[in-house]
Length: 86
Image (cartoon, rainbow, N blue to C red; front, side):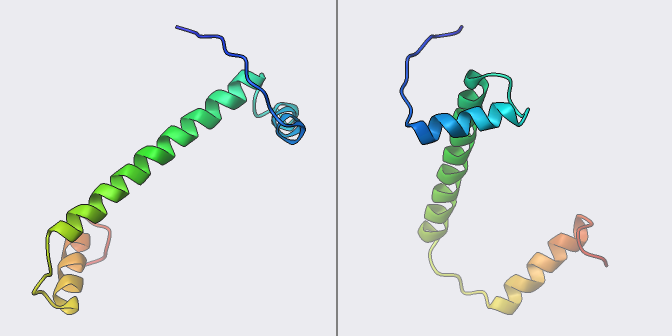
């Protein structure tokens, strides 16, 4: 479903949008705006996931593992899935 909107831009924003179309990356102003919205939505989702991961880490408390223990575990996992040579 398509919803029509009327929005205003500064002259600088308008010039930038027109330059995007002129470059051939987009065919219409609507495509430019939709792509910007998609990018912002993706950014917001990644930011929310990062916030949640940080909170999960904070909630998990202090580890009794050493940095060397953690490094060895990470290296082992990387070797196991082929991202680090054996």
